[in-house]
Image (spheres, rainbow, N blue to C red):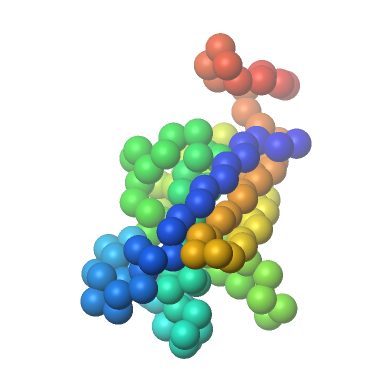
Length: 137
């Protein structure tokens, strides 16, 4: 069952200046993400923008934005084939568990100066919620 979806789009130009990118990465990215992004060479700015969009998309899918946790608690990881997914840490992980999330899906793209991300959170869901949420047993 889909627990949440989120999407975000980000301008790659925000990450093209190496000093600006380094400052943003120190604040919002995990060490693993920083290592991955810098390994992308000329594509580092596009990768940094895509990872940032992925963090925003996940926060939207959780339904909270970044209230109660830091963007660095949403980590974008890649499997051996390069497929991206999430590793949730700290308060972001606790929130996802409370919402019944047990699987994440992530799609990233970049073209024409923009990076985009689409997140799907899947799981058993939870009881309760607000008036605009679907409730289930």
